[in-house]
Length: 99
Image (tube, rainbow, N blue to C red; front, side, top):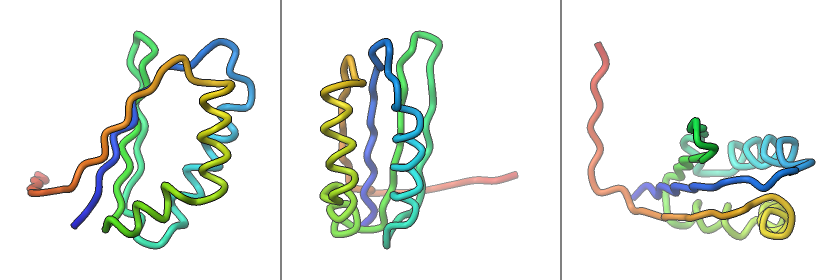
C-alpha cells in the first residue's frame, strides 16, 4: 500500500542554505528504493506544499529515518522553518484520467 506524505511549511527569512539542502533531499528521496513521486508547490501567500509518495510503509520509514534526511530535518527546525505541518496517509484508492 502506497504512503503519501503531505508536508506544508512556511520559511523564515533569511533561510540561507535551504534551497540547496532541499534539492539534495529531493535527489536523495528519488534515489531511495520504493520512491514513487515528489512534487512541491508554492502559494502566493508563501506557503509551500510538498507531496511525497513511496510504494510501501517500509520504504516510507526508510526515508523518514535516513540519517542525511534526519540532519536536514533538525536543521530545518533550527534554522529555516517558521512552521510546518506533516500528514502521512495510506493510499486507499487511486483513479486517474488522461485525455
